[in-house]
Image (cartoon, rainbow, N blue to C red; front, side, top):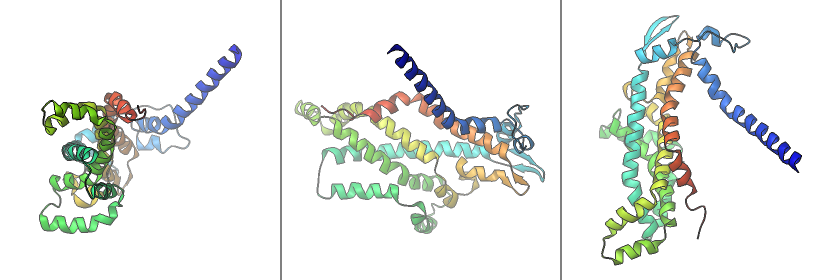
Length: 285
């Protein structure tokens, strides 16, 4: 039995190591590429031992990209700031609107409530190209084209349905008797929502907000069509590294590292809330 148990632990360790290596290899490879020049990256066969350089990160931070055709001005740091501003603001607006709406759908059933909730959810799964043409026409008429307000409004198609449906499930898992007892004590429904429902669903709300932030950060098509270069996020700004003199793989790799760092740091910081929030409702009773 001891030999069998030891063999199982060894095989499990080997399997876990292979899984980690398989999924982490692309990230590690991109990280290595970010410290190499284009000449080193394009060598055949690839070299694992190389002289690292910070030129790629320097080009991103200073906004000066040196190519064979000359020096180009890039606005990566502005694109990075745009991503932070658009994602944080969009999630904040979605939480402000979606959490009370989720509570209303969970606690107050009325005629057509399920149809309304499903219609809002359908916005999340509708192809972006389906709504881009009418959105572009409406934005031009309303003066919202190439504005932060317009982009934040469009990002609600990504964040609001996600937060609404996820948080609604957490509110439904909270026993209604707790809220009824608080209401009987003479408190208003808003006080019940603020002091009872919100704290109990807090981990779930944090998990929904984190997932919405990641989806908003990764959006590409809306910002590509509806915003100019000075308001585009990093997902669109990365196209600047495809130049007439070639593809700047080193700068692209450095841009990927810098662009995933905020979401990775946020996920690591909020992982406790994410795990706790996603596990809410897993055990009933």
